[in-house]
Image 1 (cartoon, one colour):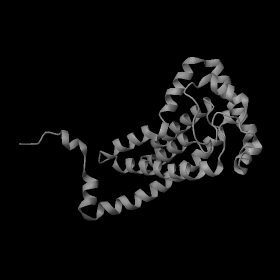
Image 2 (cartoon, rainbow, N blue to C red; image 1 turned 135 degrees about the horizontal axis):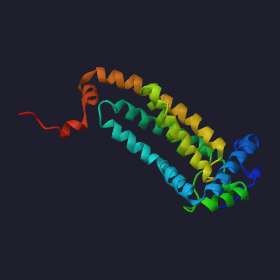
Image 3 (cartoon, rainbow, N blue to C red; image 1 turned 120 degrees about the vertical axis):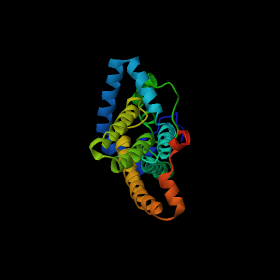
Length: 229
């Protein structure tokens, strides 16, 4: 696919055509709202949105957060759950769904979306297809284990990050709102699977053998503590 050319509806996959026909009006209404917000708020908002959306590139930021959490005993299980969710979500999204659905991005579909896109984003066209949003999938896949493994009275706030990241993808016109919804669903499934796997395997592993006990008890902070005489 040429990511710099418009793709007529009749040349899209059946799945992509169905998505555009089913969600087209809703997608357009929401994207119009974001474009109007761009025109009203201007450059300051554009800068904030572009910096925030960069946090989701390749899932690198989320992976680093997960690895950091894995260094500490109290947060290790959460970090493993986050990393597992990101990996499962990437397998679902990048290897399977994107290539099967093959939905072009908004700026490859209609000229008006392309005009809106070029008025905001100056980092070039993005590769791959549009459905589901990889950024949103990774965010949801990593935040779902956080929700289930932490205090639910507060951990639900993690989903605000997912919503905010998805909104930035719509704001810069690289995804349809229905792509964000798809990412939330796929990421939620991936994150829940990771939670189930980690909850079952991690606890059993920690109860058996020296490796499991080492995994449970290791804490990087011990490296920086002074040894008692």
